[in-house]
Length: 528
Image (cartoon, rainbow, N blue to C red; front, top):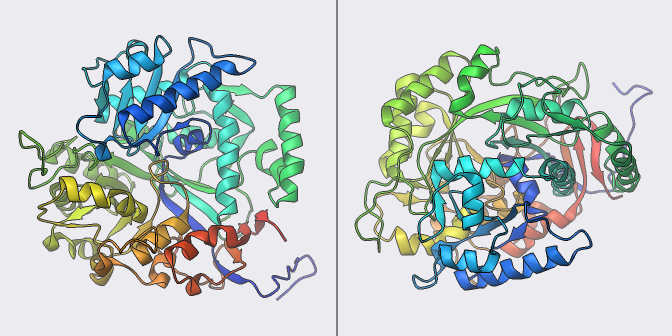
C-alpha cells in the first residue's frame, strides 16, 4: 500500500531491469587506470616505449613537474600478441625511463615490466627481459600504493570510478583487490578519509587505522564536486561526506589473511561496519564480507595457466604454473568452509580447474570458480553437481581469441564454454576482472551474446553464445533479468530495449542508454 511519504517517479515509458553487478573486479586498480598510462593499444614493445616516453614528457611538462621519487605506473600491455622479435627487455625500458622508477602491469595483471630503478625500489630481481611474474609481481605491485601521493590520488580516482559505474547501471561489485579488503572498505564506507595504505593491507583493520583525514580544502573540493554531481543524479554529499554510498561491495580476502579474518570473527555475508544505507529494508547494508579468493594458477597471456597439455609454440614444453599444491588448495578450502567462508578460486587452465573442482568436492566448499577459461568436457557438468557458480568474464574471450590460436592450438579442453556450462545447469555470473577488461556489464553481455566485438568479424565459437536473457540475468545479483516484488530496490531505467539490440555494436552502446540507476531506493545516477 502506498503511503504519503512515497515518492513516485514517472519513467515515461522507459525499460526497467534489475541493477547490474560486476562479479569480479580489482576496484582500486581499475580506478587507478583512470589516471595511469594505458598501453592496451601498443602493438609492440617499441610502441609501448614510445608511449611511455610521451607520457613521461607530459608529466614533466606539468607546472608541478615530476619528482624523481614518484613511481610512474602503466597498465594493460599485451606482449602475448607482440612478435617474438619485439618483446619486452630491461634495456629498452631502462633507455626510455632512465632513473625514473617505472612499473608497467600486463593486461591480465600476472606480470610486470619494470626498469632497474623500479626494481631496486621494489626489492625485486629482474632478468634481461625486465619481466617479473605471478606472486612475485603481485607482491611488488601492492607496494606501488605506498608511493608518495598515492593514497590521495587513489581516493579521487575511486570517486570517479564509482560514478562511472553508476552511469553504466552498475549497483554492485565483488572486489578481489590484493589488500586488507575488509579494513579498506570499512574505512571507505565509514567516513570521508584517505586510507594511507589503500590496496596494500596497511593498518590494523580498525575504521581509522592508517587513515589521513581530508584537509579543509579537500573537503571544499568534495563539496564543489557534490554540487556538480547532484545535477547528474549522484548525491555526493551523502555519498562521501558520510562515507561511500554509490555501490554495493562484497569485499573478498586472500588466503594469507584468512586466519586473521577467522580470528576476528568474520564470515562471508557479514555486514561491514558503517555500510548500512537504510534500516529495516531488504539490502539495507551496502558492504559485506566476500569470499576467500585463491589464485590457483597463472594466465593464458603469460603462458602460466596450468594445463594438461603443453602450450603450442613454446620450447621447451611448458604446462604453466600451479601456485599452490593440490593439497594446499584443499587445505585452504577446508579451512574456509568450516569457518563460514565461501571460496572464489581463480582457475584458468583445464588442469587447474580439475584440481580445484576435486578440492571443492572433497571439502564441500561453496562459492565460485573464477574464470574457468579452459575446461575438459568431463568437468563441465561437475559445477552444477557440486553446486559451484562459474564466474566468467566474456570480454576475455574477445581479447584472447587470437592468443588461443597461438598458444592453445591443440587443447584437450574447451575454451570459454559458456553455453556448455549453462546447458549443463551451472549458474553463470558475469564480471570484467577490471582492469583486465573495462568495468562495463554491457561489454560482457555483448561478448556472451554475439561472440564478437564487431559485426565485421565472425563470432568466436558461435556454438557457445548465449541468449540475451541468460546473459543479462548473469549480470545481476539474483540471476534474474526482471524485477520481483520484495527485492532490494536496485534497478536501472533504460532509453532503449536491451532485448532488441541486434548487433554487438548496439549492445555495447546500451551503456549510453542508461537513463537512471537506483541503489537501495536512492538514485545514484539520473539524467532525466
